[in-house]
Image (cartoon, each protein chain N blue to C red):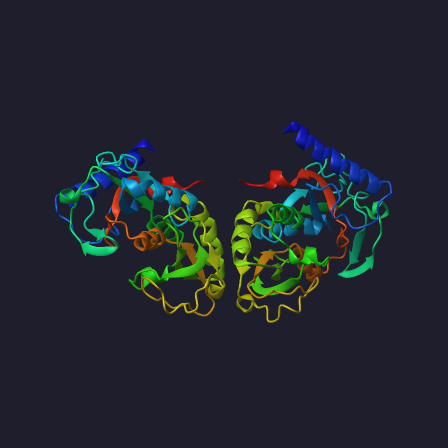
Length: 266
Length: 266
């Protein structure tokens, strides 16, 4: 077991060092397989406490894996030697809600009041589903998962408020039941689905028109299954238009030392 | 914990003694709440081994809670002082597949080659669903759960073979997801659903025409959720037409000393 965890730490550190050195600039999918990859949000301290309250009140879309001290670029709960300023391949910099830059590192933008959040991402539970033999349509098609704004409001924590965003995976009914069992074991990476089968009931009028990501077909004999999505906090932050904010660039995730299977609650 | 288990034993024994004395002849629903109630099948030894093989190969419709020794009317795994000849309010006696009697006790029919099977029943998981606040339509309407023959074949164990029979409960999607989580904890009383949402996929053409039990409406905003059903072994046995067989009469179950919550695997 220790050897296994050591492999998780070693694999995470190896990939982060490669990225830190500027030797890897692509999307992180497939790097350090088995390791948890996380969404990144960096906010000024003035907003960080409210955002943490929002995340605490909405654990399904906003599962917090690690939070930094203000001004400290380390995130030891996610990786011992991790430096949040250099260890992702690409970042997005936002000023008052506008995307202003996509730099490969953020050392020059660092401030003493910045707080970093690592949020769980569906990569972890998707690995568990694939290992169980369940086909995920968007992955087979090399597409992004389709995501939709719902009519389900998040629990507000002023100034953060907004609708739940969900990701959708089409599954045969028996696979859907198995996927509910599997993802229930992973509450720290979105957990069990929030809805199944009846998109109109959660305010989704047309599955072929996702609000984010790519449409994928729901075949005859399949049900659409909906999970709370990490785009929810991004959409909520965009709505608040903070004076300054940094996030990961899409697909360019934070590779942690945590091991997916160790997130399982059962 | 011991006191709790003692209550389960005391409640089971109290109700069985009342039934044994002839003081209770009605359906057993609601008696010894919290105690496991079981389906009963009694077969001649010549068929019992094959039936046990069938049950072993089909644990979702045929979850075996206890099996007796041949000729022994005791079933200590289900209740210490239990006498299978007298402890149910009503029995059904079958000869070559024909129902020939519905006696209140079967001492006069006992044979040295009879083997008794106590099989798990959905009462146990329904109690867990109701305690979680999930409405079960057939119970609110005072009806029997609707049951359907499917196009899913059971794993055969000659001479026992036939289609899986399922029970259906209409649920809102979020309740369906919760019900999958809850019933997954109870593998010895049918476990997780086998299907959800698309009845035609398992050979059910018309939900308003169940093969057993009463039709209940599936309202707008609800999905039909299907569990493997204890009628499956009854249908399979009826098809084999054994020279002699005894079962419980519908609704007149075996009250055991087991406690529902102790069946939970998690």
